[in-house]
Length: 141
Image (cartoon, rainbow, N blue to C red):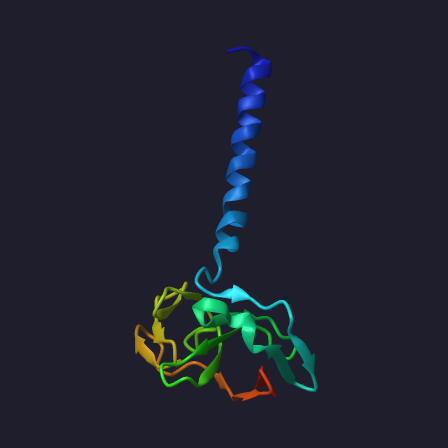
């Protein structure tokens, strides 16, 4: 292998290695989709009910709180809004289908925010949600 080929191959490998963390960060909440029509005002987020789609879940990134918030439809037809931050050490949570799991220490929570397993001792932070005129209204502060 000549010097030029060696350097080119080495550079391509470095670029590929540098891209891995970026790709991992994109994984995020794979089951839920992100909100596009949210309006935030005075600590309240309002979004069209239709944004939840068929998954009955939606991630919003309001300015009023530091972390993303998952809005999920419950079995009884009500909605819950959960801060996607683990109460144990503040780790990010990922949507694993019927569970939310902390990336750092693997505490798990149900879609109602109740702690199920792991080192966390508490449930997730919940925000009040109400349905009003075809929209969901989430009180964040």
